[in-house]
Image (cartoon, rainbow, N blue to C red):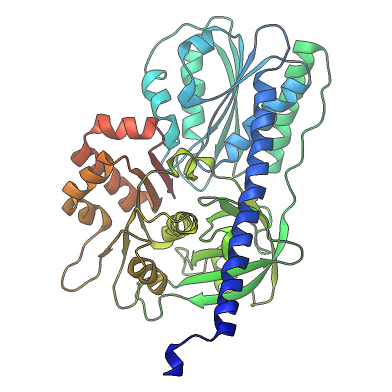
Length: 461
């Protein structure tokens, strides 16, 4: 009988653990609030500057946050040097904004197969498809892309071409995966513009936070026996100091020893309240059969206990933001589960359970990634619904988009409840198929409206 009765010592110990976890969560929340307040104050100071004259428009379109961060720093340098500045995401940009200025700077990412970032959809349809003469306008475009893709910097080049067609003078600089030479060239162009407009040399650019050394504490194979590539769960701790802050949906950038000049971004699967940073990494294989440089190092090359510098990156386009109080429909496949799990963890920590996960992998016997955690959330009522699609299941092979189509009525109901939709995983196949089903079930205008309202967000690759 004693096995069923908790002793006072055990009760006190459990209460201490709960209290300690509550203090940890409240401390993390307080630090995040102070960080966000500082960011808001800096942004308000930028927008409310006292400089006179026609403003310089700094416009950006960002998929993972890199172009947004560069745009903010570009605007800050101009503002500090005495320029009037208007900083705008392109989805908030109208033709009247362009007409009101004679100088603009554009920082534009390309995603997928030459597409504009998801948030840029209103700009593409409402601005780029219109003609608006811009005589005397001068523009500089920083196009961010990855030369491994055929449509390298396609969206930035498209905007440059549109500006030229309107009669503006528009130059473009293509940046390959954040290369240092292109960044320095852009900084030089910004300094020249500032000198021309104000006669001031301006202050230097703030250097990004240095990469922090992280130690790999554990590496766990999640799909033993799978016919697909191995997927590992990697647990990291800072080499020294406290765990830094990030939000669900954020990324880490890292470069491996075999390719130190090229950084890769990975979705974070955990939140600071978990006390560790977790990544889901699939070991990729090149066309010649050799392992990918980054995934090969993370999955097999480095040993547990080894150190790797990593840099946290805010991913504002995939954070919860204004959707934190909404029901969430989370859709993904493969290692895209990382970004979705981070949102579930963040919401569970705040006592929310109105989240529905639709996830796809190969086979239920070998590829049920993080199944124990998902089942725990489901059993505890912290995950309202879990649906999984198995593409190699012998009895009912199914892809994520097909499963979502089967759930059309429920999908409509969740959107009617005010749900936001987050998609994380592969662009080809999954994300494209999901978008097609959403437009089929909800209607294209409704999906566009969700995107415009920030209720349809994607982190796809």
